[in-house]
Image (cartoon, rainbow, N blue to C red):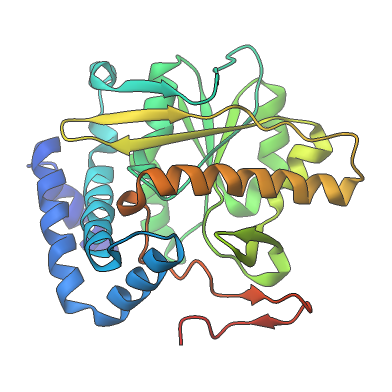
Length: 291
């Protein structure tokens, strides 16, 4: 796999950014037609989020998702002037505070792979990004080298407890994606599009313990470039009991996710089994949702 990863990046270096996007879109269309199992998952997810035409939205999600994977191969070639084409949209009176550190969250929507890079350019700041380490250490180290730069710091998921507090103390924001499913032991169950499902509890717990705000930011794909959509910061409600605070933070994060996904449903990664585990009103958990 390591030689293949090197080969893919070598081939991608021959293509322009726009060519990579077009290639990804084409590959997404191809995969949509040859993977009935993932197509079924995407269409099921599209139904859950309430779109009128699940099949059309699912197909578009394949295209956008593969475009994201292709565009991510350009991340080590991104220049600051590329951010000049990116519009910034502030939702509900949101703002960016560069004088303090916070948890910067996004989702697997739009071009999530490049959202942190462009955030650091647009707001002249640094950011640590939490990522899961790949099993093949050579591939993992290679991909980290492609993603890191003088503004962006990679945080392996096993080093969160050590690195996150240190970065926050230095005034460096810490980014993470919280919209995917997770194993039950690492999660709490929180409503999401009407279903009580898993939510990764790590960032809400740290947010509550440190009384640190969460800043939702999303990089949405446009025809020519991107649009960065910024929501109001989420602050822990210190009037609640500790466990209630964690749940409340997660609930409000999911509320933001639901809003951005409803606005751009085909740019969400519908291929993922987001609702793997569902808890009913009696506290029973099932993992047969997609069967």
